[in-house]
Length: 419
Length: 145
Ligand SMILES: Cc1ncc(COP(=O)(O)O)c(C=O)c1O
Image (cartoon, rainbow over all chains, first blue to last red; front, side, top):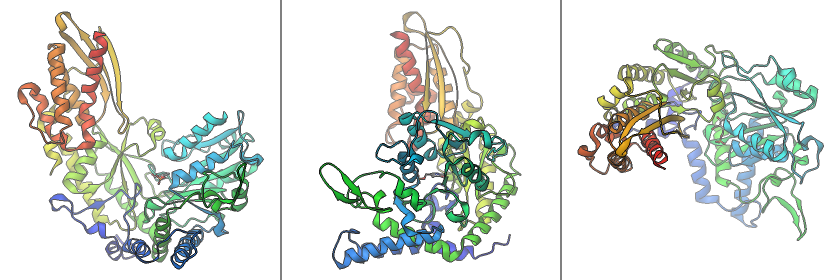
């Protein structure tokens, strides 16, 4: 198999990949959709900041404060460039993708705001899909409890694609926002954002993309996508945990009420009211995850240097190889598209008669193959397919066909143990 | 090769050929327990007789080999025993599972359930082994209320 770039050189950048597991087994890390490993470039950037430049940001009138602020705000520039944001002020740092999604959900029906687009109540609707991660389900369920808005769902087809056959009935004048995954963390499906956005615009609804599984793996440009909000999380993009991103059109950020209150998000505070800083600071109450943001900047620099097109191509080849190799295993059923059209590098499957926990345990203990087992925070999707759980292998820029071979060997062994 | 010591022959045997599976009438109480972290679930019924005798334990559920085998072993140990004796086994089994592999299993008390000793070293799987046993304890308490 010919991959377009030097995966062995890339692997050397990720120290964890060459560690040994207890018993001397090598690590085969196929769980990057859960969280990715980190390259030396990110680890060193963070270490360097802690070692030499660290101070709080935005409020310290000294050299370290200035350096820290410059690095933190520099990370914002990098994120903005990475996702094609028209302005750096449209990048809000959050703790993770979940917080970014909650931030937007809390803007609706909030008495502190008065923009009609965010006014919501009984009779209004929010549209999500059956393939969402719980982070793009529960915030909207909570919104429904608070405001009486109705939650509606796109179905998923047997092949694992978003079912848009009833797009026009689901997304209507009653819809306030449509929030869907760009790429499913279970199926691998990349959703047809353009069709959803076109319909949402027709009826005046806002659109949000959960891009947690797309931004790390393929070129994503918010302007091209035409959505209103986009969320992703640093730890899946070779960056640290504790940092996520909300991008939103600037004009919407201005219209939205603040999410959390505290230091740094204000303009002036009186005893009876406060005025707020302009976005993005309006949404960044308190001391932010400074070094994590800087680490994320380094992570995006790393990915850009490799090239997102090359990453996507490499993962595509690995996914094709895996889908082919998994076919030889008896009783294995892939949950998700079995071709490479509009599909990313996660492959979830069931093994007939064998519970995913048993699969995962044997893969880990006997073969050093790290996969994720369970419902992957997408329980409604598993219910849709009538299964409690799946085993998921996910690929990233540092994975190799040899690692997929190890997975396949492991699965043959799992079948032997439980046959 | 750590896990294979967890997947004892006896556990695999019970998983492949579960004993006493399927819900039966009559029963005094029925409980439904789930393991929210992995979605394993079990419905369990208990029928008690005179003198604290356990006449039947019937169950249905779905989950991994550990949780399913544990239910099967429990069925064998509890049915025909007494409430008092079976709860003593539950207690010893629970102690073993929560020991992180630090205590010796008492085979005299545990019988076949001693095969689960290796599971105690896998914190993530202890809940699987305990699911049916906790459900049983719950069902017995409700039956005697
Ligand atoms: C599609 C999707 N959305 C949201 C999340 C949540 O990310 P985080 O836990 O970093 O908030 C994840 C990852 O767990 C994901 O895969």
